[in-house]
Image 1 (cartoon, rainbow, N blue to C red):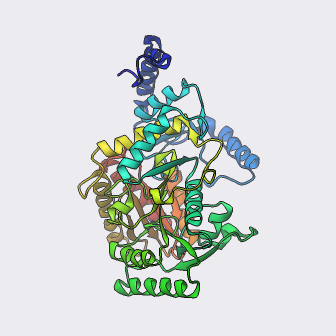
Image 2: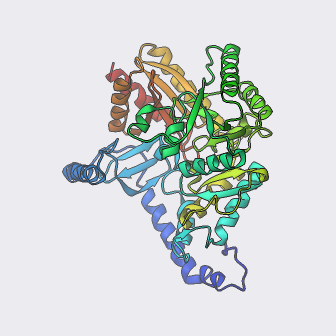
Image 3: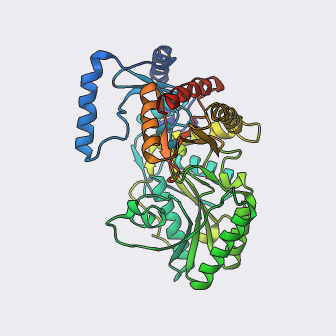
Length: 461
């Protein structure tokens, strides 16, 4: 297919030049040929063991902290499988903490990256943006029904921009509301919002945050009443001092805890009565439930003023209503994203919108049900070794053993050694979590990984 640019442009002549198209075709053919050799888990090559250990050590020394896993990729993979520099091939079921939704070495993303590599700019920003940025912004605003979209470099910056918009709109209100066990990022401001003291140790206080208890499925309606009472108490204690409340609709780092429509609408109606801006932090939930946005899954469209996205979208963004458009200069940065991220983002979002991912019978929810069934079967066989499953859609978790950090961490390392990459989340209990590359995996992949989970659990009991 020819590059979609007006034929009068020199860029159209360049991108559609037969030599360029031939080179692109050859690169994709070479990738497909090499991917045929990546079909299952493989152990590391003995001759690469020592050189790999040296790489891991050097990496940790140079960045000042050791790597969580001994993971350094070689640069090729096939869907959920990825090759490391020691020659091993592993199932990547955490996908870079939720980034590689379409899997490794996805041909469509590689093709867009080739186009990006020959584009005239590596980075795009507010002063100079290519047509790619407009295409992405239109995709996001149309899919979300928001009026405006500001692209940015990370999920944390998307949340920072959301806070800026809320404070600007609500001046002089200066407090923020968030949930217990929330995670919003690690910048100076977001470290205050994130409910984890260790993440702000030694940092100056930048913003006042009041925490509301999150939904507890064990308490049901009592949990809703408890949260609503806490919210009313803070609004009474600090009248007209809250600019916004940040909603993680499914708590990610907190342990994959979803709320309910009734829980969220109860709180949001109280907030609307007080004209407090409602922010949906979708950096982790975007694209993983029955709808493109998690707030759409919970039917909260009429309440949400700002939504932030990141991770699987590659190029991150803050979406907002026109009533929140700020004065000139409040939102800006030298660059908003790389051309490769912007183009890849459009590919990913189009794939989601045009594919069969959404709805109760969409791939996200079908994968959830299949993985949940496998984990429930493990829990029935080994009730002392595993509890769960937890999470929603392409966000799946379970609690191993007694849920202590040490035992969960050990299991994560053991799974890695056996060829399955996962991560941990939550405290008391700490859980094993998966952010599934739903665009690349099959139920058969889940079956293979479930068998490995069982073996790793039994070995650690």
